[in-house]
Amino acid sequence: MACFSDRAQNSSMKCMAYRSSAEQQGVALVLVLWILALMTIMAGSFALSTQRETSLVTNSRERAKAVALADGGIHYAMFMLNLPNAAQRWRADGTPYGLTLGGVPVEVRIYDEAGKIDLNAARESTLRTILTKVTQNEDQAVKLTDAILDWRDGDDMRRLNGAESAEYRAAGLNQMPQNRNFLVLEELRSVLGVTPSLYRKLEPLFTLYANVDGINPTKAPASVLLALTDGNSQLVDSIIAAREAGNGTIPPPPLPAVTGIRFHSSGDSVYTILAHPVLRDRSEPPVTAVVRREARRSGAPPFVFLRRKPQTIGITPTQ
Image 1 (cartoon, helix red, strand yellow):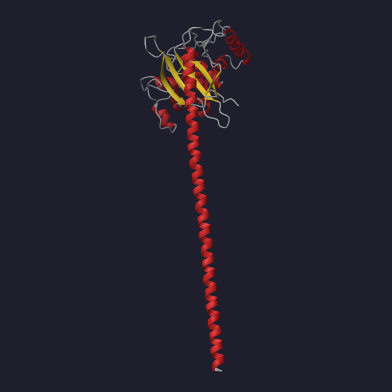
Image 2 (image 1 turned 120 degrees about the vertical axis):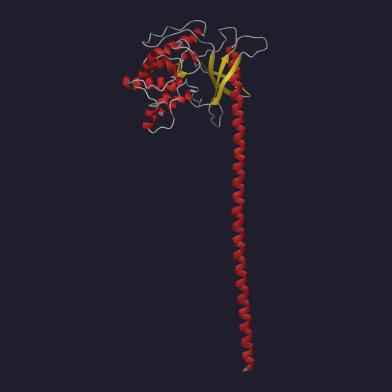
């Protein structure tokens, strides 16, 4: 009996030892699986982080390349604007021009600022006329005109339909009229009554660099011509076609007079240049620069930069 008991006890002890060893092996296996899973997650996270960093570096490099190409297009446009031969000189009426830099096509458009309405120099009748044509609402145009004039005049006296600080506070706005000329065109967004959608319509029509009331119709881009002709696309197309046929040497047909807006012949002084690299696998916004022609002096550059910034308005990327 004692022998049997000893044998049973030994067998039981061996069984318990085997079970304990098996449990330890199971725990070890679970730990190994957890460690493998953790290492797999860490490896995947590291690979994803590396991929993102590589993508950021690639995007930064491609963006820098696009900006450099756009800068090249802007400088080339300034060279073409300065050619003595009018037939070879690039026109400043929004005509698209193409060139290739480093094997990449670049589209360039030039706008003479005299073809737009100067927001600071425009008279009341000029503002009211163009705003009426854009909004198709004379009452709204009158209010906007007075609000713009109240913004740029030097006093706090509210015009009949205008807006000074009290009206802006009543509308819940933090931005108050500055009682000075507009410093950048984007300030027009803050004028009471100018909504984001309305600003998008107005931006191509206005400038701060013409320094004269009215427009030069021979320099006006299509957006201005369409506004002045109440959307007469057939007439605008004929004017633009005549410009292209004349190549800057033959004046286009005259634009019909617009009551309230004065036509002048100023220009060839300040230009907005938009340059857009046409890349195959990505679409970068065009770069825009405002440049002013300088008096010819020995050793002096023919143009100086007034402003430069990326921009998406005013040009449609080529597909």
